[in-house]
Image (cartoon, rainbow, N blue to C red; front, side, top):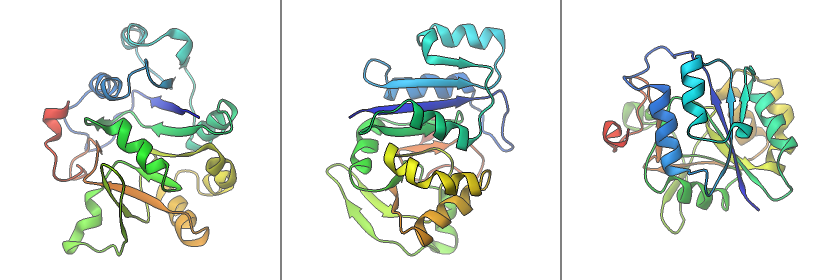
Length: 215
């Protein structure tokens, strides 16, 4: 049993992205998910030569897939092909910042729920909170059930195999994917509270953490 991480890198910068570079996000990630203890595959859709050379100073070249444009479905298929029966999978986008103990908390959640996210999206608290939920406790963290998240999430490889058709059906629509999984397939998607990572976009920071200090 192990954790296999698939980290997707692109030069594309999302609208509303805060003052953080892809390099800073990668350095932050490797700080909390060091290659010494984790199997990480970097899928580089497009990067400058300088950035590619820089990445190769941080990780072994055999762990980098170059010039490969992959959808989320493609990433899941790649994970399934490269995982053993008892492995867990963490798919990560390149504009996230993690904080201390993210690795530990991620594994705690995976032992308890079908899908987990460490990103506590602030849109769940509009109008003082609009999402009905249940709260759970693991050894080091509280969790809430949620109805959707982004494409930075984790699950057991068998869960991904069983739900691959849903990811294919709603490719590009993350809300519909998780809506189908949680409402029609009764899968439990849990989010750590507070969040242990955040998407670095304006009005999208996971609350209760000074994320600039985590960079």
